[in-house]
Image (cartoon, one colour):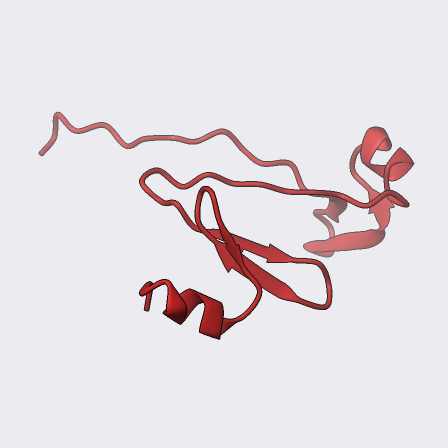
Length: 84
């Protein structure tokens, strides 16, 4: 077991500045000037998890889900395809 090395991952920057004196994020202060310039635009995020073919899309009001080549608007559509 001592030959196994711990895997380290790159740090993901925060949107907001962290104040070490009070140990809190400051939501009114952006950590990156570019993020601050883009704050009024709609952002679109994706993440691929190895081995998955599932999509979940939340537009702020509705949840849409499906796979690589299909989308469902509701649970009945999903069940009709035998995917329950």
